[in-house]
Image: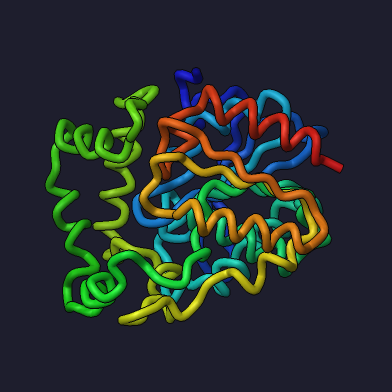
Length: 304
C-alpha cells in the first residue's frame, strides 16, 4: 500500500487552472509518454486526495495520471452559479483542453462516474475506455424518494451536515471515517484521510456550500421519482467499459448496474461488471489490493 497518498507521489505536479471563470485544481504524475488517465471523484465530501489515495500512486508508476478536483471540492473553490451535470461537463472539457489532453482514459466514482459517462457520450473521439465505480445517474427513483425530496426542500437542511461536521474534533472525524468502511475493511492511513476530510469539511463550510452538489439537486429529485438519469446516454458510449461495484454498497443497486452494463453493450463495445466482496461505495479505498491491479490491467488492455 502507498503511505504518502497523492501528495507523496514522486514528481507530483499540482495545477490550479482557471476554466469557465473559476478555479480547478488538477494533480498530475507519471511519465508524459505513457497513456493518459483522468480520475474523477464523487460528490458531497469527496475530493481527489481522498478517494484516489491509493489508486493514483499505483497508476502513476505506469501511466500519465491526472486527478481533477471537481468545482466546489478540494482546491477547486470558490465557485458561483449552478454546477449541474451540463455545466460540469463544459468545465471538464475546458480542463482537458487546458491540459492538452486529446485522447485519454477515464476513471470515475459516483458523480465522477456519471460525468465520465456523459463526457464519453458527448466526445467519443476523446475517450479510449472507462472504469466506472458505481456511477450515479443509473436509477429512476431513490429508496426514500419522498423523504429525500422533503429534506432538500426544507429551508436550512442543505447545510445542516456542514454546520455539524465543522464542529467535530479529529477523534470525531475519525469515527465518521470508520462508518463509511464496510465488510470489515479499514482505512489504509486513517490519519491522512482524516486530515483530508477535515480540509474538505472546512472548505465546504467556509465557502457556504451545500452538503449536496448541484449535480444531485438541480432538476433531479422530485417527490416521487427522479427527473433525470443517464440511461439514454449509456448506449452512446463507444469505448470499452469496466463497471465495478462493492458487494455491500447501499447507494447503487446491483440491478441498476446490471441494466447499465446491458445498455453499454448495445453500443457494440465490451462492457464488464465486477462485484468486489467486503466493500461498499468507496471501493477504491476499501479494497485497493483487489481494485488497483484490476483497474491497471483493464486500462493497459484498452489503451489504443
